[in-house]
Image 1 (spheres, rainbow, N blue to C red):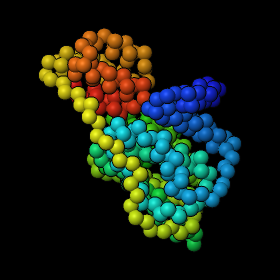
Image 2: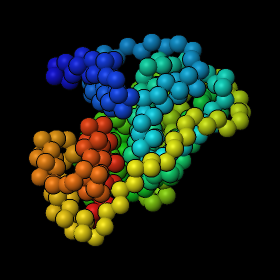
Image 3: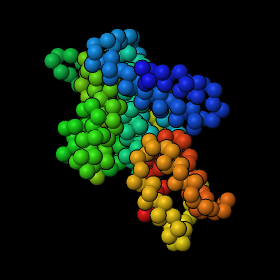
Image 4: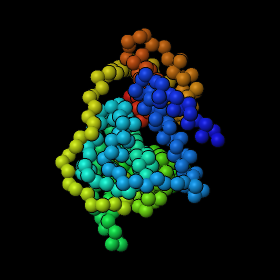
Length: 295
């Protein structure tokens, strides 16, 4: 009931905010809330799918609009190799959310200034045509011992017990349930330290080859924070405390940030401001990156 009631205020934030980053952060949070609700519906066999013939690129474009700011923050490029006439019989809202979850995951574990590729291919299984969609990143990859748990419910807890950081909570669980409800399959191929390829298959028609379409190229962030040794010496105690606090414990984080004294315009002030922005945008990857600048 609490999760369901969150949808209305989140929609208000998304539709009334004058800030694109705030609206997109709101959409990211709404996706997380929807994941929780829909995983429950799938498990209770109460999810009703609305199948329509759709262009895959249309779903992809809608998904990209919701994660543009994540790409921008890391100056990443998204390359699309899916044919413009590639179609499938799908519930477009669910497939868009699958793509959002997989792209968010790929961005989160990728280094700045890298590239994500989206590709499609035809496969035949049991005399039926399927479309295989791949989202390939150049990120940290997934350790072999975690691969069996990637799509399990609450995989984040298992990852921590194994001493691993790769996790997506309920996002990947939702993806698995949504794809299987379409009669498809989902999986991941990865070597730790060498990126990951998340893929899913959907019953569909044959695809066509297309030229490379670059969906998004974000200009490099010019707001460089140049911390010197004295700055880091002052900040290290705060950084260690921030690292020990869970990202969702907002009040504890703000309490630590409020203790940092800095002159406006100074590197320490910029570092603190960027941390606050990452926190308000719910960007855990950027938040951790800023803390690692000090440690």
